[in-house]
Amino acid sequence: MAAEVEQWSSAAVQADGVLQLEVVENDDGVYDDEELNEGEVNGNWTPQEKALHEARLKAKAKRRLRKSSSRDSARESLSEAVAGDTGADPSSPKGKALQNHDRKSRTGKGRGLPKKGGAGGKGVWGAAGMVYEMEEPDAKDPNYDESAQGDTVYATVVPELEEGELEKTVNPIVQEYFEHGDTREVEMLLKELNLGPHKYEFSSLAMSLSLEGKASHRELTSRLLSDLVGKVLSESDVARAFDKMLKELPDLILDTPEAPQMLGQFIARAIADHALPMNFLNRYKGRVDCDHARAALDRASVLMSMKREMVRLDNVWGVGGGQRPVKHLIKEMNLLLKEYLVSGELLEAEHCLRDLEVPHFHHELVYEAIVMVLESNGETAIQLMVKLLQAFWKSGLITLDQMNRGFQRVYDELPEINLDVPRAHSIMEAFVDSCFQESVITKQLRDACPARGRKRFVSEGDGGVIKS
Image 1 (cartoon, rainbow, N blue to C red):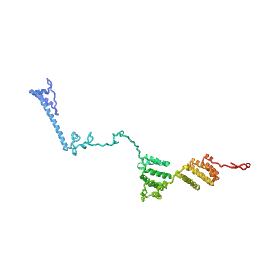
Image 2: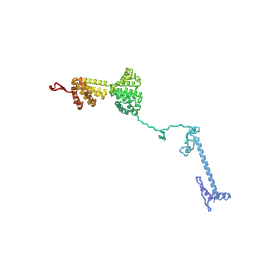
Image 3: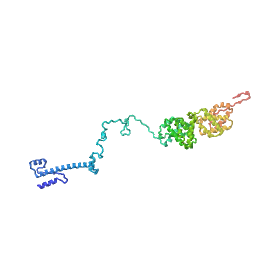
Image 4: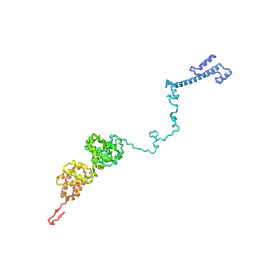
């Protein structure tokens, strides 16, 4: 019997210390705790019951020992971490346990107060008693709702013109302005552009184009600068433009030899129009090394000192085109024709007529040329005037309408002219035939030339009465 109990107890306890109890059955069934307790009370324990009871006591003791040992090991690990044991491997289970469960500060700093004064943490809106002011919505916020901000104003963003595109954009504007002369239109076009820091270059480009053009173009440029200052340009922008023009004078005189004198007139006119500061000339005193720039500044200084009132500088470019009085234009055309009869230079006469800039008044030149032929004596004047009108007709300087109007005016006034020039009809007929042969006038205009009324005597039987 003792051998059976010892074999059973050794089988119940395994090598790993975990007790595995097997249920032992007999003829009556399974033993349970109540039966064992009753046997203990009565003192009627069998050897099997006694061995089972001892095995249970040993298992309870082992379980208690295992719990106590785990508690002691945890306490020892915490004490080592507090003492500064840095040798533990963070990747080991022991190191991970220390990192996850140790909530004390590892830096040794701080007074143990809560972070952010109690204003931080999940679900916390701030410290107690804190009052927040109304903040403006940020357009860059991902939760920004544009429709909830009230009326939305959309602005057109114009990209800034690059330096290479500036000249291509400005040149057509200036050339068109030379045709219509409306400064307001130029102002509107410039406001639609984003010139950026190159705004001053508009003035220099406009002056460069006017130097290559006519006097009327320079007059229009001076008016444009005066009107744009304070609206699109500032005095500093115009001053920078003139500084650039003075530096570029050695290159400008290659195309325009009179550029220094013209630039000096521009400077004087701009100062008179308050487009340049009054002390602009004083900035360059004794600081100019270029001879061309010095000539331009001297020209401006002379113009400023000639007149006490700078109002007279409004005509520094002369009176242009149709703004001149009619008597002055007639006088200029008469001088042009007289010089041509003396010199016979067609190119000079064409240049002088273009400088007058009155294409709508060219019929006066035709009229004065024909009258001058009628008042002259000889075939030379007829040949020269036919040659002159033919050159103007082929070059397109005098249009068909202006040519017809000039001849028609002479046709209408021919009876009055005949009072001063008795041979006016015969000379007119010869001149008209020559012009028609050189294709200066049309056949219809030649046929419209009035013929002189011929008077003849009838037979003597009529008593010498003259019939018209």
